[in-house]
Image 1 (cartoon, rainbow, N blue to C red):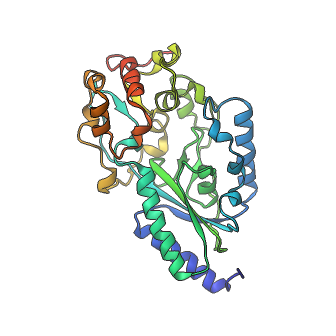
Image 2 (image 1 turned 120 degrees about the vertical axis):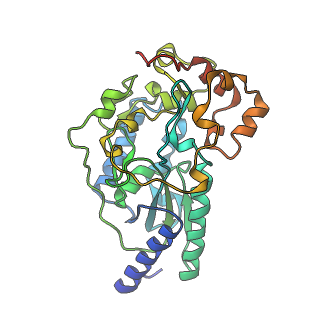
Length: 321
């Protein structure tokens, strides 16, 4: 496909981002393949992370296609990166089990996927010859690195993407596109000397800035660890967390500002979620689990894992190492 004229390229790029915002995404940005030197740096950092064994049992992180976005869509030339804010100004009640904020509402994979597909179909109407592919975080794509490349924010020392006005409470999605679009400037890191996330992690999972060892991470163990028993050091540090962990984001100064809240019905917390007791969670049979977690990202935590986590959690004492 021949490159469009600069003016039409600019207009299409602006219209595409506007269409993404009408789907509720913000921030939005565009990057071009193969990416800048920073993208290459992030790719090399992934390989070092894998070589150091920090992926634990997540073998899918080593998929070769993750190193080259062009392998996910033949002829891909651009990436539309989008963020979806899931922040609501509510807290888990004291003495209750905690669940990571991203999982309070409907499964974000479905929400983001459906909206990006609508954007893709719109793009096909504008450019009949264009091809596209939707990627949420289950696809082998360096999603945070491409979001940084597209100017949505920077990867913080806790490895989450941070936006200067929206903090880090957002999930990401990408649309790979065969049309060459006008790219935005990559985001600049604003973490500075802050190490709040590293100091707050109860298991010291953030081994160095930007390097999270999954084998020490509470989120990994409550969601991905398929062993019948959690490691003792994880149980000792678990505190009230039964599904995921938000500690490193809770302490981030960029999340201590006045942040926009989502009003999207799909992203509001389920009524029971902020007042779930350990006794209730342990009493769930498989049918109750299925009913309560229908259309939830938490379905990745199987019923026996849910009960394992609930049994190990402690709501009456602070986490200890």
